[in-house]
Length: 401
Image (cartoon, rainbow, N blue to C red):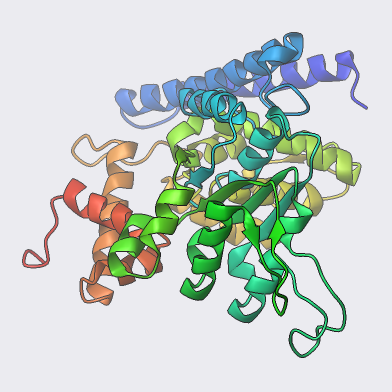
């Protein structure tokens, strides 16, 4: 376990590294403006880290203002102090006091299950069970049985009676992840449960009643699915009573240092390590947009901790484990390098460069799909609505290209 002296020495070492890097940047070669830009960027990166640590100290001093939700406090491994996350916390506080059905929207990896668990823990059903089901992970033939259970002999392999998720969640909360993947045949039966609070097991004829609060989640564009006829409109309105949208990690970049430190503490503890990340690697990870959101960042930190050289607890860009060098190299390419400012082209900024990259990726996906937006969306891991928005954002059209 690190002592206060160890922590102070670690912080002092980091400050020395920053000062040395700034001095080297100012004394380097090249135009003065570029050297100043580089020094300013280094100081800005360090300032962001300091602000993140100050925020964590405030949270530790005032648990009621915490960032993770457990018991009666608004905390279940939710990390972040950004404005976007503050809105999520407020939404959790409001909906947890009700019995309304909640639909969590957002990209994959944004923490929808954690928010669902936080709503459950904050509400009157916190003493009841919290049952989850990932709808996309179950085949259509088995999904009905998973939801409603089955009687003995209902189908081949049903050797005994089995309760479904609705029965198991009686008196508590049922969380259905990727609800947009539920096939139409099961959508009808799910609608009935939401309307009448009762159902029959597969192969049975006895009506069962349950008291369950439903929270569902999806990254799909349900509105487009309703228009296409692949998702029932009446079920959509039953699920979408209280919508809560979770922000992607790129929309709350200020939370990235907090998340990195949170995951470092967790995986160091789990693996009996004391791994720290060098300033250059931290700066790169803070500027990266993380298309896989918090889940991708979590996996990256865990791999860094597990794969770090046994004899060295400091991981820098130069000492990244060989198994991760290709991944980190891709991060550097996208962010134009962690160790230097992006090369300016007629005053082009990093943000402009990333927008140009996004536009080119969108254009390539549209051309490969014959400008069918739904196909391009699947290739990019986006919803059709997001693709349509980006096409409008960049003023693109099929005739132009």
